[in-house]
Amino acid sequence: MIQAGAQTTRDLRRRSRATLLSCIYLGRAVSRPELARLAGMSSAAVSNVVSDLISDGLVAEAGSVDSNGGRPRTMLAARPGFGYAVGVDIGETHIHVVLFDWTLSTLATSTHEIRVGRLDPDVVVRLVVSGVRSLLDSTGVPHERLLGIGIGVPGAVQEGERGVVHAPTLGWSGVPLGDALRAELDAPILIDNCARTLGQAEAWRGAGRDARRAVVALWGVGVGAAIAEGSSLAESGSSSTSEWGHAVIEARGRACRCGSHGCLEAYVGATAILDAYLAHPAGKPFTSDGTEAKMAELAARATTGADEAATATFDEAAEYLGIGVGNLINMINPDQVILAGWVGEQLGPLLMPAIREAARRHALPYLFDQTRIDVGELGPGAVALGAATLPVARLLAAGGHFAS
Image 1 (cartoon, rainbow, N blue to C red):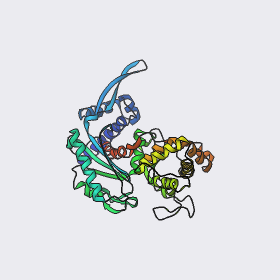
Image 2 (image 1 turned 30 degrees about the horizontal axis):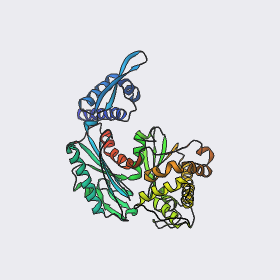
Image 3 (image 1 turned 60 degrees about the vertical axis):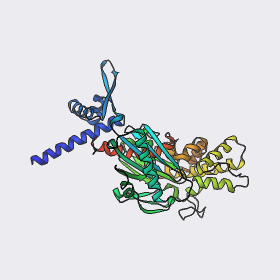
Image 4 (image 1 turned 90 degrees about the vertical axis):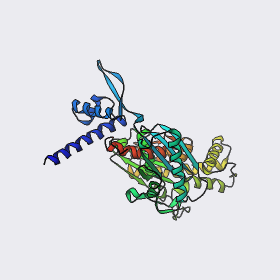
């Protein structure tokens, strides 16, 4: 009985540490009185846990602020030097490997551009391993302070820690990516769908910080969406991904690379947009090389207003994307839809008025009126940033304990 009670006490203390550390880290409460109110704990209990967090190097006092005539409140913040995390974005046009401190400030980046249609898994493993090692070596970050390596992939991840990836857009079926990386890297490996890591990045640090329920769309060569719900997305109660890009919006429409016809991705994916432009009678060859560079060139042509084919192509893409967003609003009833990913970053500001108008016409009015449609705030590094939240979230859930 005593042993069982002692275990329960340890569990309660760990949960208290996890709750208070998460609140401090995510900025939900940054003073001891705020922590006590939010967590429903006594001031003494909060002070004891905070003292332990400070002693363990996770948290530091960060100045003070006035408190309506009372004693100034001492503010608390996560201490950046406690640990480090690597985030990896395995995309169809690039592999980004980024080293962060555990507060998600970027320390160093390695990028490899992809110019082939199919990525060989062995090549990907080699590039990721090389990128991680070079970043750690160049920055001098101690390997024992690495919390883990988060990976975002454009596909489904199964079999837990083995990290078996099914990514048709990469030509992968049952690739044991986690096992392959663990054989080369002495650090925890966590793998998730890139739309979900993107969604977590926008929820923690970007446009979705204050949303109740948000859909974060990854708009790139492919199109996906992450749906998150909770009292706040940074403390999300549930999160899932959706193959939004393969929702059929045109019966017997364009062929999609998934094998179906009329999918949203066949009209708004990066390759689909570029192909539609070149197929237009007034379309002109690109002078740039690579999908991302060609899209930037096309956006520049549309901005001048002098390229009829560019304008028509983007008008069509905005209409179809608006239909897709309208469908999301009707089915999910989010309070926010965030268009992110590298295409979202390039085209979102240019096409947003047309996308919103198309979504308005295709969504139920009372649902549309309570939904914000925004462009993501985090730029091209958002998937890697979200991937780095995977080891950070695990540390927070463990109350700041990790095996060095």
